[in-house]
Image (cartoon, rainbow, N blue to C red; front, side, top):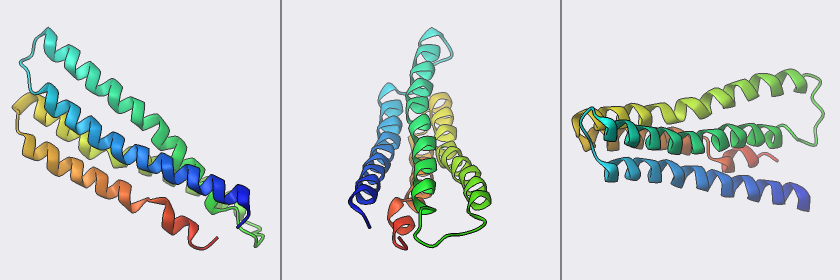
Length: 142
């Protein structure tokens, strides 16, 4: 692997770690804010939680697409690489959004009921999905 390719791999691995810690920080932030009644403070806290989640959702989509570009940059030419790349980008972008959905469901449940165990279980599922897409296996073949 060339030096430039190795730098790209390292950059993507660091971004993946940032996403992983970002999901944990988001869940801890929501637990720190705590459940509230349906009043103006609820709207403020829910808005903060959604903005924080969106701040990590955008880099997640970018990183999945970047992983995909690096994965398909192989020394062997593939005549169908454009088709494969496009379909894999759609799959990876969908995976990025799906990986955060369980955590957001847990956030909503916690804000309305105050049950933090459901939030932690769903955050664990969300992190499990994210861990499944870690970059190391994608770069093993390159």
